[in-house]
Length: 212
Figure (cartoon, rainbow, N blue to C red):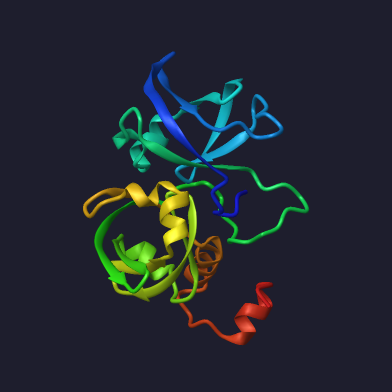
């Protein structure tokens, strides 16, 4: 489990076939306590397992499924990538609960300056849009952001200058693919509603299923 607060911006050294699968290698500014073998790290929002580690470099195996569902395969050597270690008990939860399981690839459909900030319109599937609510949370390339607008197949977020500088989001341009993960709470609610025949959300339903 992660929070969507990027801790390091690493650099993709290579993504290549390895042992019948795929392996990626990333350089980064070392953490005070080094990564451990088997540890989970979110790379552009995708949860991967550390297989080898040295000071400032680690490798992780990548499933074909992960490559097919994420935008990792479209990154070139030298691309900056967002990194976050798994949430530890007692850590501050400044973002939202992020599983590191990418739902789909979205597309950056538009960038609009708004004073010092910028608004992004992100194209996504109708299904993901239905799991999203205004002022709710969404993870883009592993970054926790607040939804400021919503349509049938798109949503909007606003980014402050710090986010653009401190993460790889500042490298994105219109038309670029994005790793998207919807809020896990929305997925559970949608699942429950589906099992109940699509009944409307009520206070009784939320209480009965432990949401309040």
